[in-house]
Image (cartoon, rainbow, N blue to C red; front, side):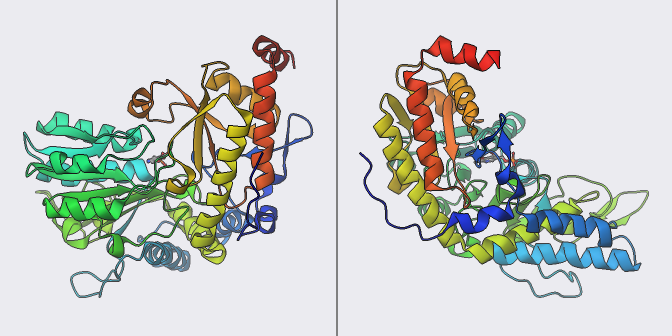
Length: 437
Ligand code: PLP
């Protein structure tokens, strides 16, 4: 039996009409239940309209011209940068003759993957030597693993991993052993995209700094769902993507401390990132332009600004509290279905992400996801770009339900009903039914 829940602090029904896609049917009359938010979120009308408005009324290239449209788009693009700065509470810089920019520590990229690769290439190549150590965790997304493996291949450094408990928490006591005087960088996700685990990043950062290491926080799954304060966290770098936080795909953010960014060489070369080019060479531009070679994601950045406005109006604390309720209910519902193994910690340690498998191994994750789709329920299945994590838990794939501000408790109950039906259904029967339609 389900335990009664307190009234939700946020009413998702208030927001659902803002998201046109949530009103659509799938499979002829089955309402969509979108539980794949960790892969990418949906967008409210306000964000779609911000994109349309930018294209219809203000579009030009940025930092290139003096005509009216050029000035308007510059204002929108740099306004978006300022919006991001406030969203993560990065410091505001005083402009001076050397650098007129007041938001020097926010760099627009194409996404979290690009942001992390930028640090690995630029900071990593300049600072990491043979025998140095890079510390990651066993729960990292491939985007926060592969760039460090590549850096290790280029430099002769060694990648070490913080292990996990069977509950899916970081074994923090291992830090005493793993943080050494050779540790140059610690790269850790604030929230796991599979386990949902909320990691104690502040403690990790403090201990890493005590050991003399720099810390990159992968905030791809945290920035959209809970308040972010880079100054309180004291992280050195922070990366996230627009498309997971109601914004468009194609834009992401890298925050970096100014002294680190200033000392780093540009990652890519091209237009927009130079102050002078001669036949002999070039001088890079000041921050943040130094890291934005070529035409940046202009309109996606402008729309990300609208997404931040939307999130700000709803309130990130309220979103986090709502997702805690959904996660709690999901655990209860999955337990009442029976026969399911949840991969990850208890709800009090996690954000709005719940991954699971049928403990017997059948039906498989792929078959479950296909079955759920008949009920209109969109979940993700597979390794979710975390192969080492799946290996750690002895599974090759999980089914993942992940939530956002527009998901309802009724949708979680529907997931439970569909899983109960999947459990009851003769496996071969439901798949052939799905195939015959
Ligand atoms: N880090 C985490 C924890 C993620 O969940 C993801 C995407 O799922 C990424 C990084 C990569 O994000 P993107 O594909 O937007 O670059």
